Length: 311
Image 1 (tube, rainbow, N blue to C red):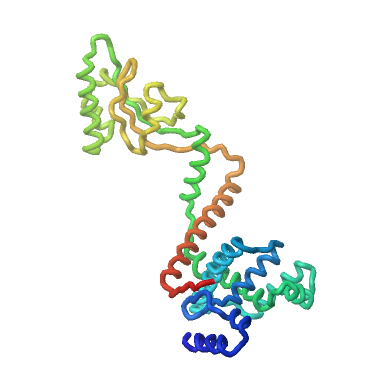
Image 2 (cartoon, one colour):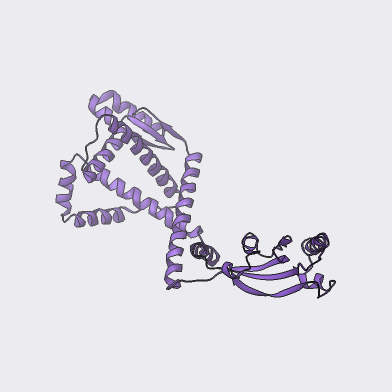
């Protein structure tokens, strides 16, 4: 890198000022430099592809943004070089020819098209190489670390269908009727005792209920119910329970209740679940890939020397 700095210094001393300005360093990334020429070329490419001319304040904002893009590309190039993932010249040339074909031009005409816009063909190829370099890193260093499980897809499907009100609850209900002359305090104390034994002593409701008279309570067999199928007294409490959780005593109009939520599921109402799962797999994979790529680049920036100079 010292040799490169000396070379640029010599250029600035012995060549015309306008030419030296091209080689003015605007950023240093590891052992590579970004020059004003690199910056100007990329801005011209953007003007060419967007059809916009950038001046004044807009130019300054764009120049800073483009410098950050070039810094990121240099980081990617340095990283790819470590693992032999820099694309070959033949691969870059192949992509360059494809772009010419897409624009219905021969290579000769495409080169002239760029030249007329003040864009060097080498600068254009450098942008193509940067794109291919990042693709190589994504495929070989990042994508292989990403996994999407069936459970994650199931969670997405549950979120989608939960909003339609198709949630079903597997509940076991114990009810203590409030009869004329019933002692409310006695019933509440009894229910609290049952609640403590089930939650703290890890006993099942059936085990605990054997100690109580069948005449005083009724244990309803666990069945799947939608919210609409639950008694009004227990509708809201059930929806707040977690799987395997026993409710605290619930006082209704004609009875006290204990409700055990044994399981919870979503009644699927999907016409083509296979297609939906494929779409969700792709969506989750892309989200993970973007997050992992962002983290990967942040780590590169933290671990590499970067210096920004005046533009």
